[in-house]
Image 1 (cartoon, rainbow, N blue to C red):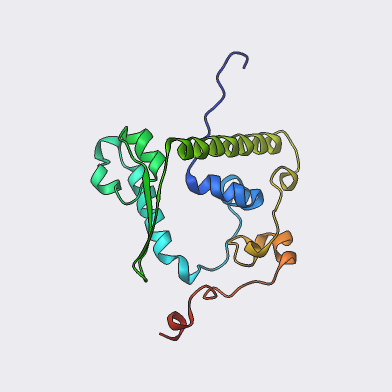
Image 2 (cartoon, rainbow, N blue to C red):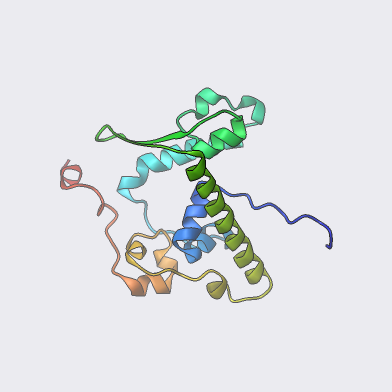
Length: 182
């Protein structure tokens, strides 16, 4: 309708990263209903999946029940700044098996760059979704980006482009030899 504001896109870091990596994978995960069948779970993703499930559960809580203590280890820098209106510039990734901590200290400029990139991706997602809704072939609106990532894509069973790109990896293929032997 003329004069009406455009509907906001509900973006998450996961959705934005998925679309940036492969628009087809985004379509399979977030647009197509029913969702195409996924392949088996990956052994190296179990902790990450648990963290994402906890984060999703936290966001599903009523606002009054969301505490900063419960979210401290789960929120991204921008989420903390915008949602909790608290200054935050450091993000850490903890690799539990090795105890390694990778940290990055953001600046106002680096945060602005991330926001701009996220807004651009969100606009691209909205445009692709609108084109598909208007009748464009979904495979054209959400093109596959074939490459090595196709060997471990969750939607490999549903994606002929990915299947043709590279051979499939075994679900334990990213574990170290020590992990497989135990």
